[in-house]
Length: 551
Image (cartoon, rainbow, N blue to C red; front, side, top):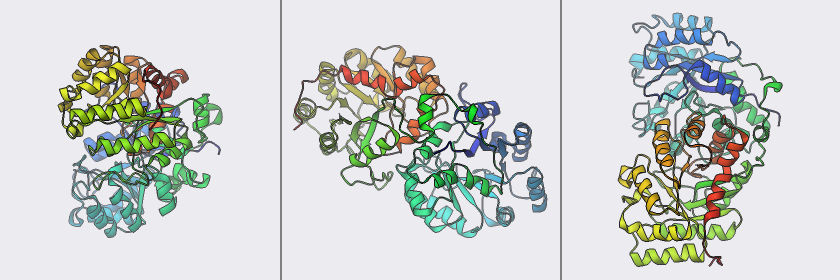
């Protein structure tokens, strides 16, 4: 289809606490990133209204966006009517919003209670005027937001109380699907954006179940990558009409007709990767996913406490990959590392390798907490020498240091046959962390050591870069839900483009946002092609296992 016009419902500008010196934050950054990802317009909140005083930040926002009336549109943070520094009456608030073309507000969690005796007049006013209201969902990982203790109960009661208030959820996560999906089924005033909600096959599922009128494009800029969010829609298996509704028309309707002007087609990027991606066509560059999982055949969920992974078996994963141009995939199961059910998980991968021989590379899990030395030796021989697995995946759930002697025979085998290992150390000091990776890389120089989630944050990138630059055989695998804006470019500036590896963590999250994070990054075509596949292909080519017949 023709290039979609994208209207972003969730962006924030301005200084924010705990920001890394190199992270994006300003109005200028927002405009640059919108141009890079070919996004026509954005609904914007100023961080001063979130972290300082609401009206001070709201008025500062007006000054910052006034030069861009057809591109940037304001969203105010609000307080209870009558609070010091806020409007004294509901009429004053609505009149000021109308005067300044403010058609959306953001409720800031932690600033006040939403109890009817405190916020009732304010919320009634928003409801009566059909003001789009952005609400951060919260979770056990974000205890400061509205629904942190019990997402379903909190929002079910709130949405029942304000049935005509158009509510837009932000900052909800893939592991909250049971709550969010049920809330969507019960409340027609609830709307969603997907910058954090990177659920596998989610956009297709939600259009099928709820239609396309309550789904919006949101990026999470300036913190998150805008290319990640738009790739989820560009590659969606829905109608062109539904894509247009989600990309821009739904937000424009909720803002009572406000909309950005179209991007001049002559200003679009002249880029062979982007030309295909913006049309939703699989890119021609060879793409290998170095970090994925699968469920058992027919599997749909990782655990009662974990994410739903729609069609998350090998067949479903391969089908989705073909939609967006991921050509090959290195996979382990979910139950192998996460549930420490290594042998059963390896069996599932083995079957996937048989069924999709040209597309799947096997990654085995060895778990010394459930396997004797003899069982480990037997499993290594079966998976690698007889079945042709090439990757090694220990995991944090084993509660072992990666330097524990129980792993030695695995590492020694990997060193002998030049295998690679995918190592999760992020927020897991018991593994030995990056210092352990350094020592292991020196002890086993023929193993290619991939640090999982290396682009999770700018701070972590600094730590990973120091590790990689002090070793010869350590690499940075990037996947992470946060998709920090331009973090891949920052990583490339620190370590070059030869040691960055693309991964997705699918089907825990959908691969399309992770792919868009790289596709739309501010890097040369050559660098993106290395990251997407060429670098990992070199690692695979080093493997020296004897030729085998899979049994």
